Image (tube, rainbow, N blue to C red; front, side, top):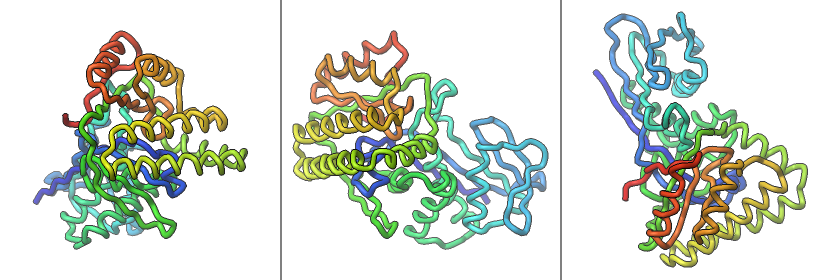
Length: 331
């Protein structure tokens, strides 16, 4: 018996840090997916294969459902797997698990499209099927969220997991005060064009969120006001999508981006790296919008315009610099 499950990566279009404050966020599904498979292992031991390290790791599971590695340890590349077995309460016996995530890296650099959230979804789906846990869709989703939150030391909003689970091209989502999630599918109006660029850096989302949580407490009054304005701009963006108004969508995205720059400058979170600042300045000169996606700090960048020719020209101009275009959604 062999089961396979997959889940796409996510891309924050808008609402990154405010998602942890109960604000609405807009997210895209990437055209790159993680695949997790489980099958009977004929070598009579348990194995985990991860494409990140391109090798098998042998393990056993004790009665506390703790993984004990025999020989080499995959360390951080095995951590989410260890947590999954505990949360889902399964004890493998002569099984092989494979986690294939090559599409989430570019030249050995993590792209920043939520590999851990996609793995959380795909591994939960595969375990649910292989071990006949009979989790329904809601239970499967919330177990995926719990798995990812435990892996991230309970940092983050969980919206990246929802996006990977739903798999729709674009959704609006938020987390309520009672830790429930609501979402709806959106559509991008004709005339809005989105490009993606990636440099050689990558960020640790958990560290970025920890810095954000710490520094917002240093300037409570400033954060109270800036977060109010940012949530207001996200509400405007939601209304603009509902009305399919291209100009209002762009206006709301620009307002949110300007507020995020102000927040980053004041709280010194590090959302905008030097490469981000240079990419943003060049975009502004050409009349288009550049913003980091997700936690920032060197991960993925977005460029957005209502003029495709201008956007294409901008992306082409990056070919000789540190940031390079990357295709992440189907046209």
